Image (cartoon, helix red, strand yellow):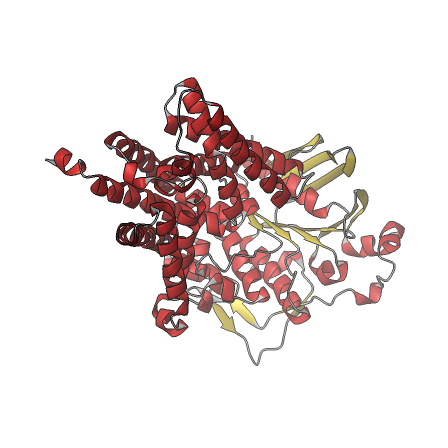
Length: 269
Length: 273
């Protein structure tokens, strides 16, 4: 099989996923495809089955019906919704990052630098703020060089300013590494501008498409009645720094912000 | 020469206690981290049932105790997954039923006068050479298992789903932990008795937390503190003529209190809170 064709295959291809628990239908014939270098956002109200869908896609749960196909060689970097570590467990960030795989200190620092928190390496995980913890989780997800990042409510427990930063970071990473991103969120406006595809979920797939299409869809407006189209674009991609090949961050103070709205052709630097 | 040395019941008692504490401490760290104290209690209370079965079937007691503990542990995990009853209710039911069932079963054994107190509170001074061997084998297996399972267990303790996504065989590791707990309970039964085993696991681990900056430091320190408690408890029991099992637990408790009375800044170099 020629290689280019292989690269066009979706990273994840889930067809007609249904999930039942104790006779209760959680997911109803959900189909999702994640393309390489694409940001897909699953959105839906509380109890819509977003996290359940994520668990099925990750392979943590097997669906009652339907199947999930992964591209061979898929490496998933997973960032869970939140992580609370018992204070009675003495654990530094360094140790936390190397729980599953050993890695050189330089590698750890490079990943932490990529998410903007290299100074946290020696800190106890329990001393981190919500935003710092999210960044450390993201750094850990990046450690095995994933081609698919799976993020469950990545900005949960982070204040509004921090939320924008987290999403900007995720977009930076996507641009740098070209990995696909699958994200769960309950707030479309926050992620809108960064998303290539939006899947509006409420047990079944209500509607799917590009963000603007979804936000105008009657099903979406019924689920999120307060959602005004004007609110789109809270999350903009403002560069105040660049990353060099080693993941080092350089401030670009004085330069005007390049207010790019994610033109996909312009990911090369 | 060593055999002559082992003829001394006090030497056997000290050795048995030290061996048990050396493995109960590190395992206790996991019990504390994973909030399994009550779980451990429930399993150890069921050990008496193993003793009764061992007598009835004429099988090796340590083996039967290990077996029954593993069975109860698996049953518990299965029941917890059904989630019809709150975990603590379930543990309460099982802990006390297993203990009562064990006591009832032991009294049914005819022609045999079982010293119930010895099983409930330990009888370390009665440890024979064979018992010592059994403790060494059981404790040794447990220690090796713990070392092999250490990293996956730690990953599991920090975040189970993350561990699963990263390829930790969660079910196998959990079963391994159950087996470990069962092995340690079987080994520790004669030292502190089924009612006090959990104390020997969690008190040294909880004391060690203040000095530890890494999980490994906490585990090793828990072993050391547990061994100190065994030494102090045995000495106290000898001097004041008190029951040894409870004396060891009292010594561990005094150590815990002492460590927590010390001002926090003493621990700053160790990264303690």
